[in-house]
Length: 210
Length: 282
Image (cartoon, rainbow over all chains, first blue to last red; front, side, top):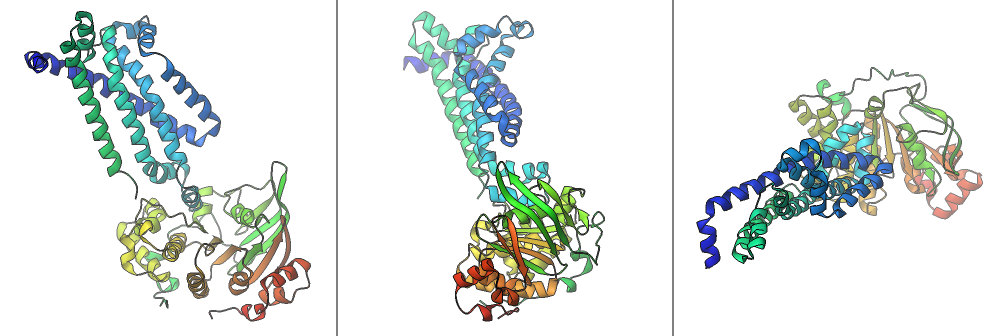
């Protein structure tokens, strides 16, 4: 009961920090899609590049998040505004699932369908936009879904560099050794992750080819 | 299943008939539709095709017959440039196909494969109408064309709104043929189109193919390993073995041939082939 009281008393702040959190996750996911989907399409058609690109994305994924935030802090333009920095870091983390699923989705299109399309005289870009992308959409979205869920979790760490978000409560609670404060950040973050998972999952099912 | 054919291609309204402007591919009516000149194709150390010389006459059904790995599918794909020859050239309508715009070349050549390769996220109507749509036809004209083609391949009009997974194997292959005919190509390439069908459906489709071919008079190159199919559908049979063209014979010549490879084929398929070599719907 004390927890609910605490959250209610601080509801404006909970809402503000949730919005900040969404801001970080939203922009970083958008950027990761804008970079990751074309990159995935590109390596799907250039087999030579798939290992280097997926390998690099994999390596980024293994950098501890706190360390990555720290590395980026001295970078001039980024260091001025910590939310820029947080968005960049979250974008980098979101890349791997999106690139990998775009690649897998496009490579997974039935080769007979691609050959028939090519044989009919579709150009490579017509093939991509009329056939390969629509057929890969649900696989790409399941990558986006993983990326969003990871970002919601990782964005809590952005508070360590002052980028805001629900991590503020978590770090404050840790410093104060007060579980209520920690949970006031952790519970909304968990709810956000579940909602995002559900929402993108719904979209993914809607767009699945028959 | 007895299928009644409706309109033949030449009876269709003009607006529905010829979607692709063949400006880049002048029809040299006298010469062969397709000609292979000293064509070889090699992948790494494997010589898939060796010194192929072959002419496909306008309006004939040339069957490429051979075992798996004999190079027949490779030969077919060289025509619409899905693969490029290592040496030699392929002339389509008298012009080297390496010099023609790739998209134009392929839209002037229908292509049907065993796996059909229908777009699973499109309805039958969109599958058939895709190339006309990309070519910028008005939607009424596409609709009319789709209906005419469905009728031509013996499918009821209501199939148009279904998705490929809702069709039987035979229906899917009919849609595949209709789609290949959408741009009214003069040449049709068929790679074991009936190979995956049950014998009864295959028999239906072979019979319909013959009727269709009588009306449309396309130049057809047809790949199969089934001698019976080759004898039934082909006006000529090009027998291939280990990347070489062994012989090109009419069905009647083929069954009597003394060529060892042809004779081996005839032996493998047993008796009763003489009667199979009669051309026409049975």
